[in-house]
Length: 197
Length: 197
Image 1: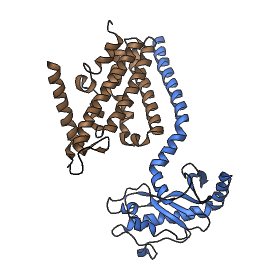
Image 2: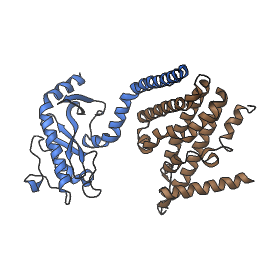
Image 3: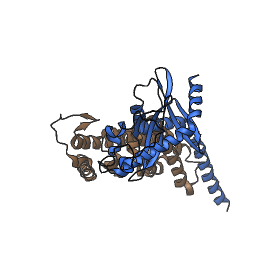
Image 4: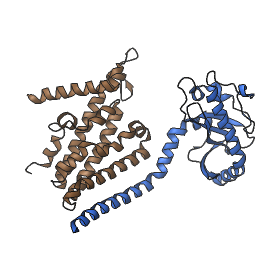
C-alpha cells in the first residue's frame, strides 16, 4: 500500500511540474502565436484589401466584443488617417462555412475590398470566389449598408457561373458584415482614434 | 561503460543511425520527407526533444520509481514535444503548418522513448547528452538524405530552388507515398551493402 502511494505521488508530481512548465511557456508565446496565425491565414487577404496602407493592420488590430463574441478588427492607415477597417465574417457556402474579410472606409461606408479567406468550396468551381478577381471587384466602392444579392435573387452581383451557392454565401457574409458594421461603427471610430493618440 | 562520450556521439551517426540501422522512426521519415525543408525541420525538432529528454531522464534516473518509469518518461517527452510545438508556432508558423500532426507525434516516436529507456535511464548525464545529440543528428541526416532524393527527383527542386531548369519533367511518383517506401527500401539496401564489408 505504501509503495502504491509512492508511485502515485511520483506520477502526480511529474505531471504537475510538466503542466506548470507548459503553462508558463504557453503564456509567453501566446501573443506571438496569435499574430502568426493571423499573418499566415488572414494576412494575405488583408494585405490585398488594404493595398497601399502605411501601417501593419495586423498589429493595429482592435478587439471588440460583439454580441458576446470577440472580434478582431484590422485598422488600416491611409494618408496618415486611420480611416479603414477590415474584419472577417462567415457565410454559408456550398461545402460549409465560407470566411470573408470585408474592408470598409469609415468615412463614407464604402467597401474598399472583399476577399475570401477559409473555404471548403469545390476546387475550380466555387473556389473561384477566392481566386477570380472580377468577382470580388463587384463589391468595391459600393456602400456596405446596401443589401447584397446575386442577380438570380434579384440583386446586383453577378454570380460565378456554376457556383451560385458559393456566390450567395459571399453575399451573405458581406450582408452580415454590414449588420456588424452598423452595430460597431461608433465603437470602432472611438477606439481607432484612441489608438492613434 | 568504458565508452567515451565521443564514441556515444559518433555511433548515432553511423553504427546505430536510427532509420537505417535501428529501423526506428519510420512513420515520420516516410511522411515528412517530401521536401528538404520539412526533413531538416522535423530532424531538428526531434533532436531537440531527444537531447532534452535524455538529459532530464538521466538526471532523474535514480528518483523515478522503476514501476512507473515509462509513464514518467512519456510525461517528460510529451512536455518537451509541446514546448517544440509552441515555439515552432510562434517562430516558424509556415513550417508548423507543413509538418502539422507529425510534431505532436514525436511523443510516440520509438527513437525518443527507446533512447530514454535503453540508454538515458542507465547512463550518466554527459553520456546521455552525447547519445541524444548523436542519434538526433543521425536522424536529421537520414531525413535530409531521403528528402534530397525525393525532392530533387520528384519536384526538380532543392530547398525550393529549381535544379534542372524548366525543361525537367518531375518524377512525381517520388513525392507520393509509394515513392517514399521505394526510396527508403533502396537506401536501407545500400546501407546494408556498405555495412557488410
